Image (cartoon, rainbow, N blue to C red; front, side):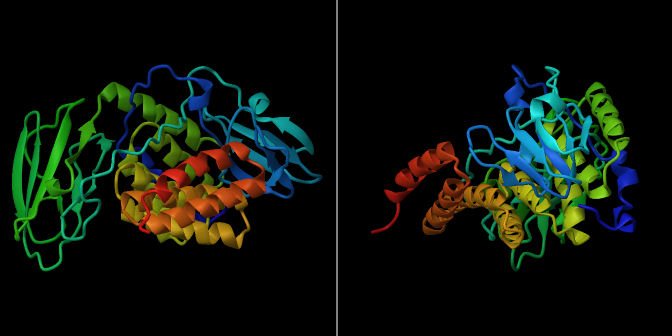
Length: 364
C-alpha cells in the first residue's frame, strides 16, 4: 500500500480538518474495528466459522475471533481498535484477540449503518446536497456543494438552524458559508438549495450537518495525533484516519481524505471500497456505486474473492435503492457464489434470504 511520499503533502494539514465524537451506548467487542494495513509475503486469514485460510491482500477488517498465519519471511501490520499497531514479523499462527486486545473502549468502530432510502435518490434533475451531508463538522468555515442541475443558471442557498438564518444566491453548484451568525455546538443545521427552475434539494430529502463541542474535538485530535505517530506507510495512515473519522460520524472529512487518494491515483481496493461505503452511508448512492465498481475491478484483478463478495453485496444493496432490481439480483447472486467458494455458509444463507425476497419483486 505504499504510494509516492510527495503525493501525500496534504497529511500535515489533517489536524485542520473538522472533528467529531458521538457517544455510542453499549459498546461491545463486536463494535470494534481492526484492519490489516500492510502485507508482505505469505500472509493468510482464517475467518471464524470458515475451515480454510484465505490470502491477505491488505485492507481487510478483522474480528477478534479471526486468526492470521504467516509463512517464512512474511510480515504484516494490523491497526487495532485502540489505534495501536500490531506488527507481526515471525512465521506462525496468531489469533487477532492476542494482538489487538479489547480494552472496552475501542476508538475504531463498525458504526456504518446505512441511512433510510431517499424519496428520489440522487435524481440528476434535483440539486441534491453533496457536502456537508449527514456528517459533523468543527467550524463554520465550510463549503456547501450540491448536484449541478442541467440548464440551471442560478441557485438560491439557505442555511437554517439555531441562531442561523442565512440566504445567498450563486451561479455555481457550490458556495462558501459567509454568514455572520455563529453556529451552535451540538446543533443540527439544514441546507436547502433551489434551482432557478423551482426544483429544491428537499425534493430528495432533508440534508445537513451538526457542529460538535470543543471537548469532543479535543479528544479526537488527540487520537489523530496518536495515530500519526505510528509507523505506517502514508496510504495506510490515511486509510486509518478515514476509519477514525468514519467511526466518529465525521463522514465529510473521511470522504475528502479518500477522494484525495483516488485523485492521486491510488489502486488499492480497500480505498475505493471504503469510499463507496461512505457515499452509501450518507445516501449518495450513485457516487457510491461508481467507487464500488472500481473496487470490484481491482479486486478481480488481484483475485481477492472475499473483497469481491463484499463489494458485490454492497452493489446489490445500492441497486435495490436505485430500483435496478435485475442488476441487484445478479450482484447478490455473484456475492453468494463467492461466499460459497470461501466456505462461508452463514453468508450464503443470509444472501439466499435476500435473493428470495428480491425474486418476488422482479418482473415476469
